[in-house]
Length: 226
Image 1: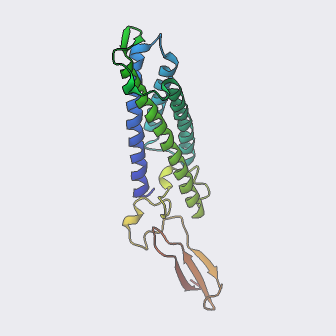
Image 2: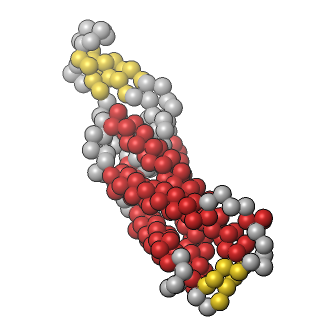
Image 3: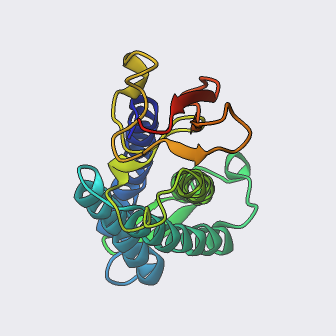
C-alpha cells in the first residue's frame, strides 16, 4: 500500500466515522425520547446501522483484504441506503422552518417541539444519503485499484492484505515506494519480463520493466548468458 492510498483510505475512514457518530448521537437522543412507545422501528434500526458501521471500521482499520473491504462496503452501503430511504419516508419533504415551534411531538415522557424533531430527522436523512454515496464511490475506487493491481500480475490480490494495493498509477505491494529512487521503486516479487531474441541485437535478451509511479517503461538489452 502506497502512502497516497494509505492516507486516502484513512481519510475515508475518519469521514465515515464522524458522520456515523453524529447519526448515532442523534439516534440515541431520539431513542431516549421515544422508546419504547413512539417511532421505535426507525430509531432501533438507526442505532443498529450506526453501531455496526463504527464497529466494522474499527475492526478493519488496521487489517483487511480487498475482498473483505468490498463486502463490508457493499453491506454498509445497502444499510445506509435503507436508512436514507426510511428517514425520507418518515420526514418526507417537510420544510422544518415552516412548522410551529409550539406544536408538540409526543414522546414517552411528554412532548418536544415538532420543529426540533424535524431538524434532527433532516440531519439523519442527509447524512444517511451522504454515507450511501461515499460507500458507493469507495467500492468503485476499490474495484478499479484491484483491477490495476491484477494488470501488474497480482492475480490473487482480492485475498491479499489490503496494504498491497496501490493508488492510481503506482505499483502494488511496496509501501512508501514513491520515496525511493527510480531503480528501487520496482517492488519485490515483480520480476522483469525478458524476451529472448525478439528483435534486439542477436545473442541478447530484451528486458522490459513496466514504469512505476509515473516513470516511463524501460527496455534493456542484456547478453543471453546473463
